Image (tube, rainbow, N blue to C red; front, side, top):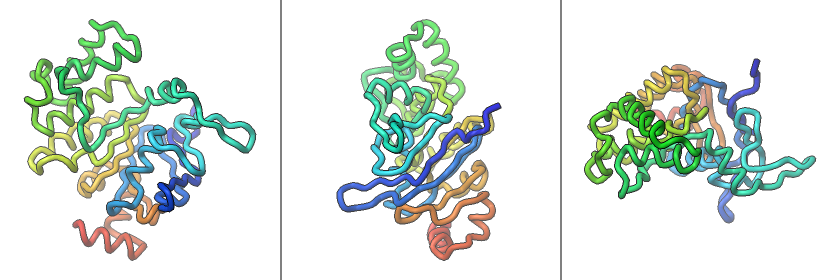
Length: 255
């Protein structure tokens, strides 16, 4: 039986030039758990998320996904960055959804979803298309398989992006403020898809400002500020009874 957390961050540090963005992050996410990261802009939430799948190199610490050190090989007390092909292989098990949808504009919704399973994982194209249609139905877009991104609303594009990430059958999904670029009336459809994912047992780490979603769906709520974890715990505790003044001030400003 697997006892280790699916995601474990140990003393994670990151700087850009003289600016230290992450100042020693320690977090654990269990399999099947949803963690929501809250905090003001510039607090390090998105940078931490990008470190998990090694889109950003670490300047200190370790991140393990499913017991495997991400992006590096350990050599005694030292670590050495893996080859790009090894890092790419690790990333296949991690789906990521960005603020902007990053769909290929010249491909249809279905083609966007099948591109990686066929081109990266070597899946049979017929199988990939069949699974892609199932994923489109899952995100409420069964009738949009042949639509190009320019013909879809922002919310629809983001749901295609979620389906595209799911097409690689990830063990972990990362969401970087997935609704922040959407018009308010389009946010609900995307959050509903994410609720469905959470209820299905998908392990998720979500950077969000949607307090209601975090309260409803998260198992862990983490408040970050200035590169550190200020407070964490069950959502109802952190939101209803924050223990730190900085957390209280932030929640007062957004609620």
